Every structure is written in structure tokens, then in C-alpha cells.
Length: 428
Image 1 (cartoon, rainbow, N blue to C red):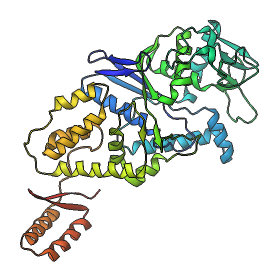
Image 2 (image 1 turned 180 degrees about the vertical axis):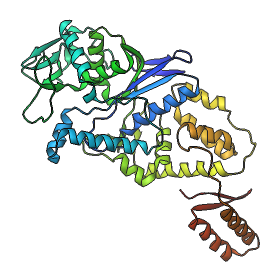
Image 3 (image 1 turned 90 degrees about the vertical axis):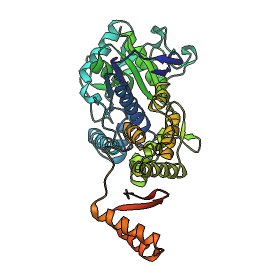
Image 4 (image 1 turned 120 degrees about the vertical axis):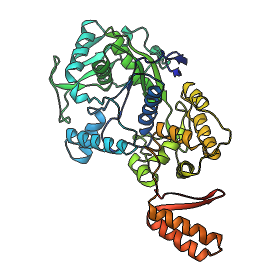
């Protein structure tokens, strides 16, 4: 399988099965319900895990939850509640909402609050190696001490501005590893530098190492994390002598009218809202339609189109099988083995639906979590009503046929008239 590596800026061949393939993906910072854009890395990397396992790989997926962060303190103060309470509540929202996508969960979902000893130990190593220094209870990373800084993102260290301005830094480019406790912060942890809490970037370096050890195959996340978050992770972990991630995968961002969806811009649509309005099947079909590295536009029109496609697939699964020529499973596999090209895979799904290849279609839809298990079989009563309605239509009694259609729908099923005869499928 070939996958585009953000570090080398080319497609890289993964090691042959069974690997292993260990994947660390940056998850959400939990202070409100996640938006539909936050769902993209969750979906994309679970899909990759499913496909790699389908191809015989041994895969372990870790996706962290950031429950210590400046944004959590600010949101908690706005809500007039404790930051730990808000983080716990938002974590529950995140798990509930992503559970409803029906894809299952990552193998491990570490919390920053459960990784404090490992974070402190990693910072101590960086201080001992001369890559970090203490200043009035804060600890900062020396960007100038790491010659490869900027290799992932292309950022020029000589042209960088301060990531977080502070008079406590030796160099404006340096970034915080540990932050001394402030008056407005209601949580803190002990450390060699006094009470405080970790910076955002060091949390992921420590959580990845806790789960995988000093190196692993793939680090993923949204494109907006490439700089400074992922650049800083590399500097921290490699500065401490760890090889860290072999390759990097960054999914494209979700856009509203060409503007990136983000909490800071206030232009978000929550995953919960989209689930309630369109359902998980439409969401998954929607994300299939764009290459994982490309930006993807969001609108009600696009979601209606995705829902229509989802319903079309559901109907095709229950249509009588046919034997018209169509793409093979190997052709489908080739699209995913070439940088996980889901738009081309989606085109093959439509081809299978149109040509009556319900077995291949069902296998692929189950792979992407769009359907689960075998198709539902209508009960005897529904099948009897469908047959009576068909006979009424053939006799030209459309009033009776319409009444029977309403009865069928009241029992939770729909009927569609095809050339091969009536096809019945669940309403939902």
C-alpha cells in the first residue's frame, strides 16, 4: 500500500503485511461538542485501520484526548464551572457522538491527565540534554537547539515569530513544555519546577511514547496541526533521542463557503447536529466523496446529496442480484492501495449498485461502516402486503395499491417498483 507522507512529500510504500502498523492520531481538545470537521480524522484513520486489517496487517490505532489545555480553562470560566468537570463532560459528548458513527473506537484513547508522570519525565530529559530550560516556573523548548526544526512544515526558523509571546523566553521562537500555575487555573500538578500543567505539544509526545515506545510507523491528524503542533512533537521527541514517527499523514480541512471550519472562527456545525439531521450513513458517504488529503466543502446541499447516495446504496443492496459486467474487488482494492483514494472507490460502489453487484457492494459498504451486518429481511406480513400491492398495480387498481403502500410504510418499510418487480427495504 502506498500512502502520502507529509514529511518526505511523496507516496511511501508501507511495510508488507502483517506489519505491524502503529498509528497515533491527534484527537480533540475537549471543551464543547466536536464539529463535523473534527470527525474527519476520526473517520479517515479508522477507515485506514479497517482497510489495512482487511489486507492482512496487524494494526494498532491510538487517538488521544486532550483534557488539559488553555481553551478548556477559558471555556470553563465562561460557563462558570470547573475545568476538570467541563473536560469530563465534553469527553463524554465526544465519545457519544463518535460512537453514533458506527465505526467502533480506536484501540487506545489516552488522556493527558493520565499521562502527567510520563510528561514530567520527558521534560526532565530535555532539560538534561540542553534542549529545554526553566524560567520562573515555566519550562521552554529551545527551538534553536534542534537543527531539523521546520522540516515537516517547511517553516523557516529564522523567519518565525513567537508562538506564545513571553518575556520569560530566551528566544521568542521557543515554546512551552510546562506552564506554572496561574490564578485563573483551577487544576495543577506537582513537578520539579513547581505547581503547573503541561503545554499542549509535550502531551502528545508523551502519550505516543507511552502507547508505542520510542518509535512507530505513522502519525496522523488534521492539516492544521502540521505547524506548530506536529513540528514541535518531532523536536521534543527527537531532541530526547527518540526516532518517533516514521511517516506523517495529514487530512485536509472541512470548509464552509471556502472558509475553514473552526471553533475560533465560530463557524462550526457540530457532529451531533449533522448526525441528528442526516444520520451516520450520509456522513460516511459524504466523507468518501473527497480524497482524504484534500479540503472538503460542507453545506446542506452536499449533505442532501450524500443522503440520497446512501439511500441508493441501501436500495441496491436489497435489489435482486444481477450478473452484468462491472469492476472487480481487485480494482476496488487498487484504488485504496494507492493513497487511499476513496473518491475512485466511491465511483466503483456506484458502478456495483447500478449493475446489481449486491455482494461486492455490501462487502465494501461494511468495510466503510456504512452498513453493518446482513440486510434486514422484511417480516411475512410486509411481504404479503407487497405481493398484494403488486397484484393490485398489475390489475390497474392504483387506489388499493396506494393504500397498501401506506400500510407497508406504517410497519417501517418502503417499497420501490423496479423493472424486475417490487423491492422492499427499511424506511430508515
